[in-house]
Length: 150
Image (cartoon, rainbow, N blue to C red; front, side, top):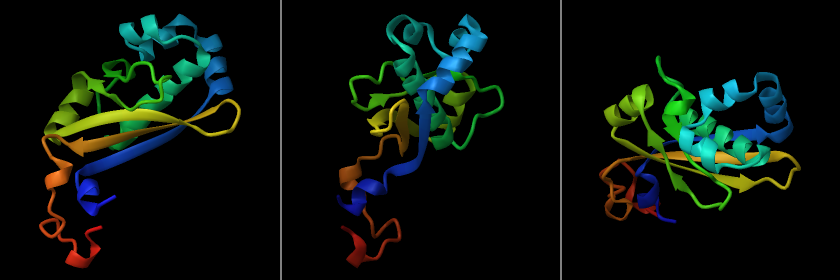
């Protein structure tokens, strides 16, 4: 992959989700946790503790890619949807999270990867500068020596 692609990436976040730990938190908190963390659409479409764990973990990854949860930020203002298909998904933001992304002109995607470890899911998020065409990025303009372009 050429360096030109990577010049469009602003930041990234990763998280490991533990299915048993999330199940324990859900049993302890009940519906209040679901309402506080998941959008209405996610609550209606994401099925099962492993899938909910992956969505929560992806939300953690997005917060890390944004540099942390801003004042007034809420997990319910962050929509990643069902990640069970394994494809990267665009992230929808609202409230304080949307303001942070807009101020930095960021577009976010999130996804998941199987770890091979029972009950553990690895999720990731990438924040790219909105409107940047990775194919047109010029490494020399970004301060990269010509010999390091690919």
